[in-house]
Image 1 (cartoon, one colour):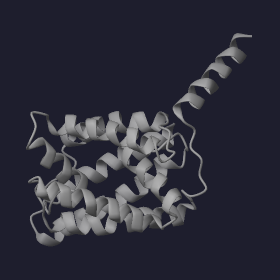
Image 2 (tube, rainbow, N blue to C red):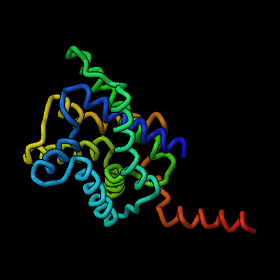
Image 3 (cartoon, one colour):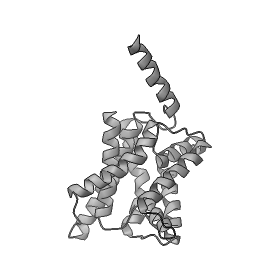
Length: 213
């Protein structure tokens, strides 16, 4: 559980870092803002609803949500607000500073994905979709992740979401960052089986039965 929570916190830190780079929002955030522009929903509500829809769609390609899937949806948003309130990140005064912060955020997201997936308690909605497609299509992580990022970026842009040079950089490098972290950490999404939420509940009940006897 500590590894899972660290991964979720690091993921949130990576998102905030890319936002404070002031070089453009990530593809998914461009997508969320684009939808929010055409609905009465807030950015957070759009993100949550998008997550639920992705979990539903992922089920049809064999991805069952796990405990980490639910925690991902809740805690990353919570940690983003906490990190923002702490004032850890500042908008850099130079282009180079912004670029370095952007790259740092991309690397953090890559490693965060590794840390919270390695516990095998389920992937977040977007990463679950990525893992499901990797297994189905049998292509490298960087290709699948990159294709997803570029697709939502295009849709978000069409809907009026804000796009900057950092958005383009993120779209084409986030998959590489995740792939690199997986390689260094020796994590293979193709051969990994996550514990779904039903199995987790069953295991908890078994432990309770053991302690009660």
